[in-house]
Image (cartoon, rainbow, N blue to C red; front, side, top):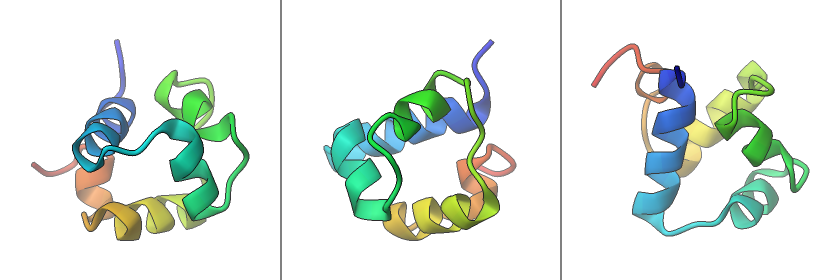
Length: 68
């Protein structure tokens, strides 16, 4: 079962029309990092959650599935 975070991240990327590599570059992580997050092979650090929330203009609670 996919985590809420992995699904939300994919949805937000699709809504914004950004590929994994562009997102990685824009927030300053390695090229494969976003893929690892979306495939639940790694979890982001708090600092990256903050960057993602700011990038997509959502709350961290929304990003991790604690609120709709």
